[in-house]
Each structure stands twice: as structure tokens, then as C-alpha cells.
Length: 221
Image (cartoon, rainbow, N blue to C red; front, side):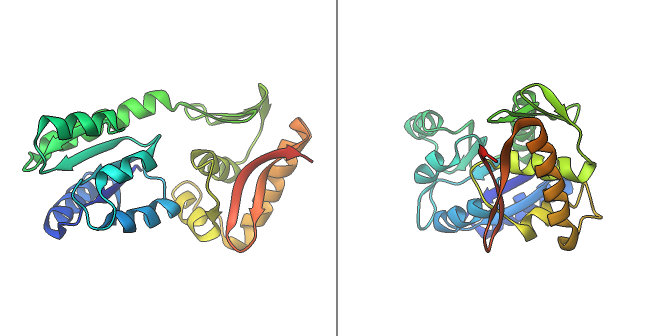
């Protein structure tokens, strides 16, 4: 299930978007200001962002450079050509003006997610490579056999390579794939995966961040 972030200070518009996207099968997370959005993105990496430009706190234009690697559709009342051009050159993948037809916005979302999926069939971090289609992990082309839970964990970490993922967030995000993984067993799965990666590469790839959770790293064991 794809996660879409709605960054919109107009509660009415935000509610319409959230209800529609939920009905279409998307997970939705929300922020009502640019400042709140920054905090949101420290905990989550959505698959797509719907971004208003005229936000309290930090503006949408200021947020765009913070969202590299995530497709952003600007949804704004600013209809000027300069606003469109500056947003697209500033990193937005698409731009739609308010008021908009919800069917058109849903089509634009589908196009962006499909395009990202086509380019994200393989995730890499250092010598690690995950094939998202075959659910296979390799280190320098050497296959590493993982359990379903281990694969869900490493996939999430590789989708967020610069972030320390809290244990609670990790468990919540992988619950769709592995509902049987509990906090008591998470360390066991991490330990087993570290051992498998170390045996193939001689390196440590998963770092425990004290008081938070886990993140990717790469150093010799």
C-alpha cells in the first residue's frame, strides 16, 4: 500500500483529499504547515507528496529542496506561469491548480507512482542490492537468503537510507508484510540478518541507534 503525504493548511481541502485517497486504497499522512511537514518527514518517507505552496511556517517553495527523491505534485491556487515553472525547476514532478478535478489529480498521482515504480525496481546501498520484483537481496552479486520478515526490514531501511527508523515505526511499517513480527522478536531478526550479511561481505550494514532504533551503515566488522 502506497503512502501519500498531504501538506495542506486548508482543512476542508485536506479532508476531501484524505477521504478520497483512503477510499482509493492509499495510506495518508498529513501536515498543516511547512514546519509540521519537516517533523513529519523525519519520521516518514512517503511514496508521494501533495504540496500546497502557501503554507504557514515554511512555504511549499522552501520545502521542495527537502523532498529530493520523492515525487511531489504541487496543488496550489497560484496559477501564474512563473509559479509553475519555478516549482517544476525547483523539484516538483507535477503542478495542478486549485480548483481541480479530483479524477484528474488521481490520474496524475497514478502516473507519478507508476513512473517511480518503474525506476525503483532495484534499491541499492553500498554493495547491497534489492530486487523489488523478485524479492531478492544480493551483496556484490552474491545472493543472501532472507526470511520474509528479514526482507521486509531491510527493504524499509534501504528505502530510508539516511534515517534512523524508530522500532515502533519499523514494526508498524512492516506489519502489512509480516504481522507476526513483535518488538520482542525484532532484535532476533536484526541479529540473524546482520550475521548473514557479515558472512557474505565481512561488513556490518545495520547499526543500532541508541534510544531510537536502527539505520543503515557500512563498515568492516
